[in-house]
Image 1 (cartoon, rainbow, N blue to C red):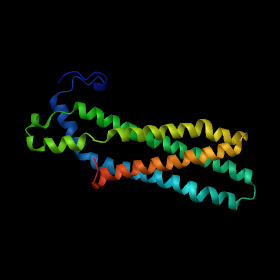
Image 2: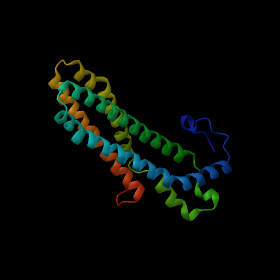
Image 3: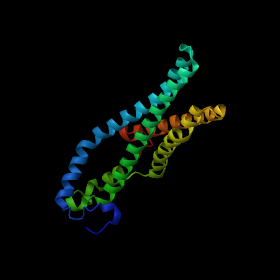
Image 4: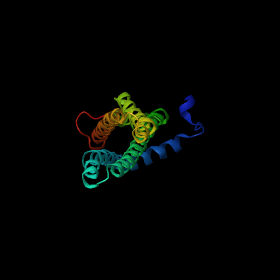
Length: 196
């Protein structure tokens, strides 16, 4: 089959039959996994929106102590940033899997499926993968920045107005990235016009 270097992951001994079995399993379970990813990304987008728009303002209205409300809000923002990191990592792993699969899968002509070659090549290899990589890396970077700098800066209390403004901006970017990832996954999952 030829060597694919780093992307082979030491799987050179795979025979054509093993790749055929993997291909059939992928075709069977891919729609369910795609819908599960869509639900996870929808939860991510909804959680960021709910915490930022509804829960945190409600905390500051309901609790008499602003310091206590601030501590609870900080814990919520840590949780949402960890959720952003998890979803960005899942999106990145899915992209790596697609890249690996596109290089390792046998050509349909080897199985006698010449008519399906065009369909499989367009559905397995995404055409707009650069923006997918960018969105995944942005999610990881934003969550790391929020966890490493913004939240500790707010909790220290020095230049609190600056860190609150920075945190609001980073949180808004996280929410925007989650919406973009959700939209791209909806295009793939449900075959919306303009999908990969």
